[in-house]
Image 1 (cartoon, rainbow, N blue to C red):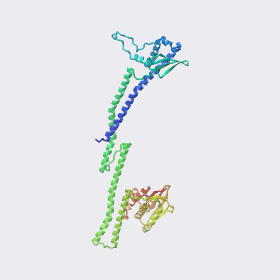
Image 2 (cartoon, rainbow, N blue to C red):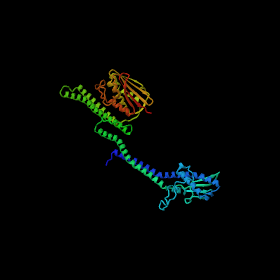
Image 3 (cartoon, rainbow, N blue to C red):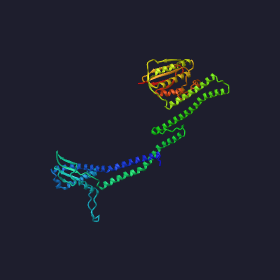
Amino acid sequence: MILTIRTKLFIAIFLACLLTVGGVAGVMQFNFKRSFLDYLNEQESRSLTQIETQLINLYAAKGSWDILDEEPRQWEKLLHTAVRSSLFPANGDEPDDAQPPFLPPPNTHELGGMPPPRHPLKHRMDRFTSRIVLLDSQRKLLKGNNRFGTPEDLHSLQLQGKTIGYLGLHRRQSLTEKVDVEFADRWQRIVWLVGLLALPITGILSFLVARHLGRPIQALRAGTQQLTSGNYALRMASSGRDELGQLTHDFNKLAERLQQNETSRKQWIADIAHELRTPLSVLRGEIEALQDGINQPDAQTFNSLHQEVSQLQHLVDDLYNLSMSDSGALSYHKRPLDVLALLRETLTLHSTQLHEQNLQVDTLGLGVQPVMIQGDPQRLQQLFTNLLENSLRYTDKPGQLRIVSSLQPQWLEIRFEDSPPDVPDTALPRLFERLYRVESSRNRATGGAGIGLSICHNIVTAHDGSISAHHAALGGLEIRVRLPLNT
């Protein structure tokens, strides 16, 4: 059985809420009786304060504890006052000789001769007084029961700076009064009842949250299936700024990139077919003319055939180099080299061709001082050759080419500026796309296939540099190359 992401989210959220509710209820159950017992002990400890004051006054009046033996009701009266103060703090100013409400007169006739039941407050008073202990200054028992031993917390009774005795209370170790036990049990039942009522609410909330979180995931899954089927025009509506919203944004970017790649692939195939069709058509026409006897197999015909084959071979080589560069399979053997010396060497190799094409070359900043970078000399020479051939192919004759180098703190910038024609603004960012040509001014009649600048871009990128196209001050195109220095 395969669980959907929505089901997994529901189970995870529900279990998390269930564990949280159960944990809170368990902790509250565990701590409540202890906290309630501490509360009762604290209330009883506060009752001892009034007994302390009255005991000190009683001792001061008689000068000893003998009065407790002479008048036993004094001890009961003190305890009664303390109990009433703890149970009925609002009536703490009630006269001490008032009849306590928890001491009803016995009425055996109404109960058929049976003794009356003990009042719960009387029962509490008995348990409370049974845990009170009064000791003299020598810690000998005066009042109370010593079966529990000496209380841990003894209150010193002081009269004029002299210790006259000690008053202590044995703390409760458990809930013994019926009313307290019933209250604790009732409160615990309420906690568990609230926990049980929280279960369906938790289930509903978990379902709603899981459905809310699962909806964009399901939508992305359906969109992915459409992408795999070739629907690259699909775009998903953003669901927010969280991770799911970012995932939707990334999905749209992926769909856009796939659509661009598909369009580029189709254009790439169409352009390659177009570029190969022209020289093949010329070759076929020349060969058919020879077969029909229209042309003679003389030197002019062979030169024409050779020119078309060379052009076709050059195009195939460019396509191969571009495909190798795009796939990262083009090998680079980098080493420290003087890039300006390599540029001067490339200009020397093309000096004859530049002169024949009536293209005047001006250089600035190409001195003899070496500028070292980490690069592949063969690929960098290919870069400079493609840039020179680009100017040779597309610049009107006679023309002008200016090569300027400038040294930056971490970069070397080389600019190739030529004379008209220029390219439109919209064409500048696309010049480095494969097989792209500006048909209005730089067309195939010049012999270019729109591949050289794409190879240049890949070579510069492989050297961690950048290349860009701008309008030249001479009226043509400026290609700006930046290469990192060897630091």
